[in-house]
Each structure stands twice: as C-alpha cells, then as structure tokens.
Image 1 (cartoon, rainbow, N blue to C red):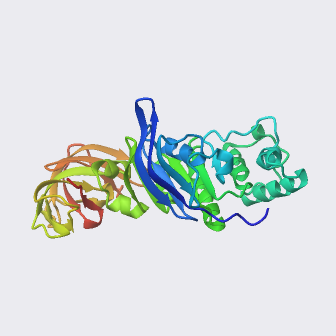
Image 2: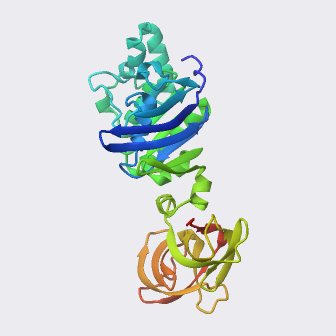
Image 3: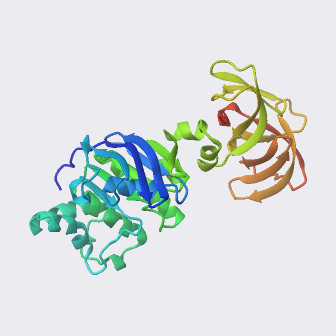
Length: 356
C-alpha cells in the first residue's frame, strides 16, 4: 500500500439538520485538526450520529456548511469527499472473502485487480490480519471482523476516517483491546479520525478532543482532562464519568476563583461565573475518602446506605448533610456496613463548581 494520503481537517459552520419539524442537529460549529482523533460523545438521540453522517455525505445539512480540507463539500456525494467510514455493523459482504471485502472499494473505483490486491494485503497487514485474506467473514471473531472493516476503510487512503460506534458489538475486554488498536493505528499513520460513541470511558481513553452533544447541540468541547476535571454543566459532569452533585456555598468571590464551603471544608476553586451564596458542587467519587469521625480533615458526616464489593474496590453510598455521596474506596479489607456512621474528606482535584 502506498503512503497514506495527507490528513485533512473537518469544519462545521452553523450546521442544522431537520427532519420535518424535528431538529436533529441545531446550529453546530466545530473544527477537527488534521491528524487528530476527535470523539462525538453523547446519549442516544443527541445528534452525534447525524453529525457524523453529514461529514460522510450520507445526510445533507438543512442549513450551514461542511468543509473538509478547506473545501466546501456540503452538497457533494460521499464518493467525492475523501472520507471512509467504519459502520457499527461492519457491513461486510458475507459471500466475499476477507481480501475481496477489503479491495472492493478499489475495484469499483477502477483500480486494476493486481494493484487492488497488493493494497488490500498491505491494509490487512496494517491491522494484524496477514494470512486471513481467503477466509469468509463468518469464519472470523467479532474483533477480527472489526479489523477487516477498518482495513477496508484504510485501503482507500482517506483524508478523514469516520467510526460509527465500531466497538458496540464486542464484549468489554475486547472493546478495550480494540480501542487501543484503533488509537495506535491513528497515531502511527497520522490519520484524521472522527469517532462516535456513547461510552464515556472509550472517549476518554482514545481522544485528543471530545465534543459532548446533548439535545442536538454541543454541550462542551475540549480535551479529556478538561471535560473530566472542569465540566461546564451538570449534564457534562454527570455524563463524563461518575459525579456527585452536592450543596455548597461560594464565598469571597474573586475575578476567577472563590472560596467554596462544603461542610467544614474550605477550598479555593474556579467559580465558573457562579454568584456568591448557594451553589452546586460536582464531586468525583475518587475525590472522596472515608476517614475516622474525629479526623480533622473530615468535611462531612454521614451514614452508609449501600455498600458493594467489586473485587479491587468497594463502592459506597453515604447520606450526608450536603446530599447523597457515591464513593469508590480502594480499601477492601475492613468494609463499612449499611448503617455505619462515617466521616468524609475531600481533595480539591476532584471538585468543580457548576456554572449557574
């Protein structure tokens, strides 16, 4: 296979997609830099797959523009957009061998069969499937079928690769392995990738940037760490990982930061525009630890209402004066029981003031 075509950027400018009276995507603008992996993340029906299909040319915007490599492709058919797509179902032809599946796009575009075979074999090698060319898709595992779908997209040397929830049909362990392979391949070849998933762990693990969508609009865009540690809303805080929403107070508000009072704890945090007084504080489970009731670090007192042993960790629900707190505890040797009185300490790294 020849050297990969230059990676292209993707840009949406005020794109809206309507189906009759229903709005699937509303006034969405974003950009994807060349050679990066950007994930569209959100719950079912948020507009992420419709957005991906508009990049591919499988759907046309009702308003706005789609640009790929600086070229306005809004009205162009899929074949003219320099993109390849890996579908959720893989969409492999069951009567064709693996090699025939991978070379299919090259053959229908007029490439000589010999050249198409060479390129397809090279693409299969890229995804670790040397020697599988003569098998049928039915003779492969789910993970191997997924790799064939990637090779079929890769062999076209696209400027942009699109993935529509490609791991949703795999079990948890294989999903983790395949997401690492996709990320490694993207980085090794310098591909521009737009990736759709509803799995926040998957998005955090593979993305350069994440675009969180909700109700047809972008809720927040940023790097995985930014979204996890500095969510812009209660929705993002709850969707990107587990998050407790606790009642707190903001005092001594400065231009960017203020003092947040949670029980007996006082922590200086960015206030994200919140006014002084009662606020909602997002608290990650790993930012909370159980301490002795008399410990001076204790911020809140509470009662254990649920306890679950997960092997490497314990999970607890604690009813506190600031609200219900979910805790992930690495100490499993002496677990707390339902009804136990406990004290909770917090660390600033897992706290975020939610904007008003």
